[in-house]
Length: 311
View 1 (cartoon, rainbow, N blue to C red):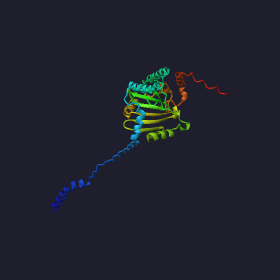
View 2 (view 1 turned 45 degrees about the horizontal axis):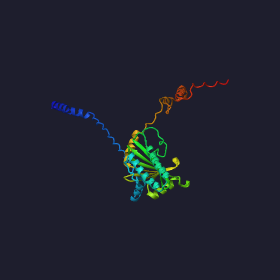
View 3 (view 1 turned 90 degrees about the horizontal axis):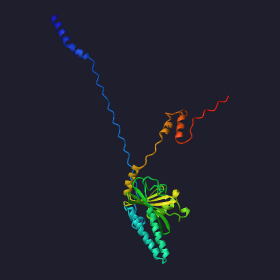
View 4 (view 1 turned 120 degrees about the vertical axis):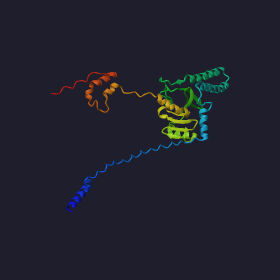
């Protein structure tokens, strides 16, 4: 009986040992979990600026612009020769009345010569802007053209209704696309030579336009008209009509052909250090400064020695 008890105890221990061993094993730590970062919020899209409101031009005012600028037969797309031929026809009609009004042969001959001279002045005024400086680069029309972009111009003095205006015809690749009229302000009293008076007069005659600074603009699908105050610079007022279709393409051409900005001379760059990192001490560059002065055509020489110390 005792022997049976021993065998039972041994068998029990043999069975329970693996269980105890398994129970004593330390539980494995759970695998660390990496927290997912929340996605960065998408940048807010800026709302596009609302389209600029354009003041509409009435049918009556549109007709008034057309009569003023295109009266006599002018139209966009005309060649230089066609414009000159039309001007010659207008002169023939105007001088024919003067010649008919007199029976004096000498006066008639003088009028014929005047007509021929006037047309000759228009023809000889033709200027092609090809990079060479012209007398128009600093003038009332200095902002109306660019060089090396296929632009050219004719000028004509217009004496009509006691007003001595100047009309400029601008061409792009030989085709008329803009007319600029310098208005005669000599008949105005000094207290009326200002933008406020100009604006009131123009908008009374042609309706409200878009006003900014010293400029009034009227826009239609066929043309764009601008009234420009140049009283401070040239004591003049400008009245301009353009073909917006040509203007749109010309802007890109002008930007592409614009002259590059001149870079600072490498010699000067070696001396001037705006960040003061390479040349913190001007005294260290005395020789370099002298070199620059000499290169620019100025006097040179070494830096004079300091004055002797007083004893």
